[in-house]
Image (cartoon, rainbow, N blue to C red):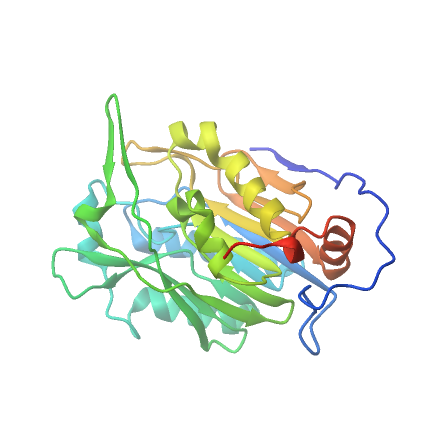
Length: 298
């Protein structure tokens, strides 16, 4: 399927006034540019096949110069029914999927954000939908358990994640060479208060498996809104296509800049969506329209 690269539109001339004290400043030693990639997948009910495909896409992204890769929600497994995920859940800290992520990060010298995988929950009938982050040495750098659980009823489409997933309760970020990265998953995208709780981020990530129906209606506008209101980059990796279980996901993995412009996007099918983050772009946007430092509530 096609991949489109869209250049950013022009901004008003940047203000020459000194930045407000509350405005973001790069961390000491933070890189001015940082290349990232979203891996779009059409995952299957066979974990081994999915991990092999993830490895192929990671290698492609690394060869293209990416320093961080983001995988989609449930990159490792899309079963025939909701309860199938219970059979592939892992205890936190060990398991073939977790070892794969750590080894791949070390092998390709990448920051790897492992979309989500099913981690054992206190309740035997449910799992945690967990994002794990590994640094280029293969060390775990962050964990986020999806907070908001999707529920949707329309015609023959019916989803209720709470039947098989326990919600998380903690907002999570981590420090990358480019700055703070905020973690979220799929349905979280509809709750802007979560992103405000992350604080001042240079990048927010959204691994997802949006349905075709909800994705067509709302995916792009929600992603662009999160980028605009937080004046940072947003990287979204999606499931995108017709799955063996009969489900169709929306795809359209993309990178969005702090002005809300789409830097790169892919419609459907497996592939890599890559682009370069620029600290100067964040500064330009925040100086021209200083909404971030004009916040009053919260």
